[in-house]
Length: 188
Image (cartoon, rainbow, N blue to C red; front, side, top):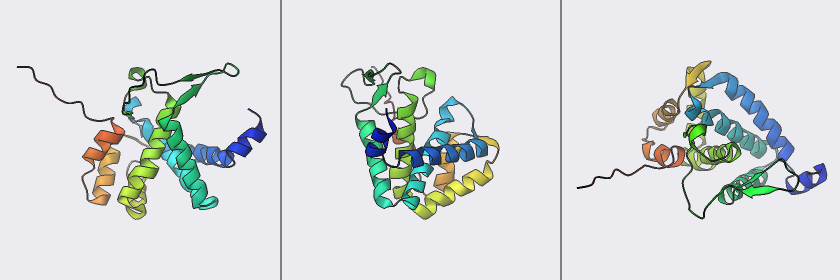
């Protein structure tokens, strides 16, 4: 893709990518995922903070456009191959399914780029508005200070948000982070 097309269609993409890389360095050095199922934390925080930077540096409308762009990619996900002009639809069927951020990469066919977008969207557009900016950012500040240089788990992140918010977020994390509950079946 030529630079002109990218600038025309996504005028703030360079800013977002640079901010994501810087945020990724911070979060990646600050916190270490305890396992592959917890890697989403760094990816999602990097993407969310890149979006927050865009909102601060360019404005709310640019932030909203960026988040709407992520939402469109999630609703109609596509993977682009290295072959010139080739692309493949990620969804293999018309079935709708919840994404899991905590599924180990070996056990999911969801591409890393889609999982990163999904994590960004869940944190920035779903959890932050639910908790409010003060609680959301206070929880992350406390979490980063408490676990600096240590391994972290999804459960520890959830606990940090719950303690700061004074609310049970089990249902939110089960549905939006873990990909929904698997119902228990009993045959009689």
